[in-house]
Image: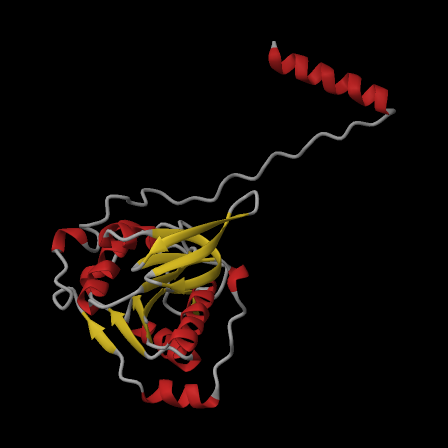
Length: 260
């Protein structure tokens, strides 16, 4: 069983700052971590490997510093890491990111299941996972809370919905995005940390994955952040004194004045 886990390194702080000139995140001087939802994807990939055998390959796209996220994933039990790092990838929106990751997966060739966290904490779009599956033309199931079984070339999973959950069956290879209800991420072992320290991380550039220049980075990103601003504070509400009956009368009068 060949499992691929796609992760992202995100700012640890919730106080995200934006560069007013480029409208992109300011990452310099900000501590980074693995996207919290991706930790559940890593854990589920490792659990599948422990049950069925095979290997877990973890991929991330980002600057050179993102290598430490891959090493952390290896310390948890993943087998190898691949870093997609090239200035040509800078400014990628979710479409370009999905395409880039898909091209890297095509280079890997052999895979049975791709696992992503349901969304990234810095963008919250939940679009990259489905984008990868679209570029690879494989089935996808989002918001997976449990993998029921994997056998006979198919996977049966529970997918979370607003009303509860639904059970779906899909042929392999497929892509799933997972929610935090699926498992409890483990902590790295001493053996895992030693393995991660010695691991050789492959770094691939645009040419290595044969990505078309017009489909990556800013050139491949049809969505652009035009303006970022802080919404104005809500105006203070009005407090009514007196009895409930008097307050109701005052409220009705205000509403009538707004409707006239």
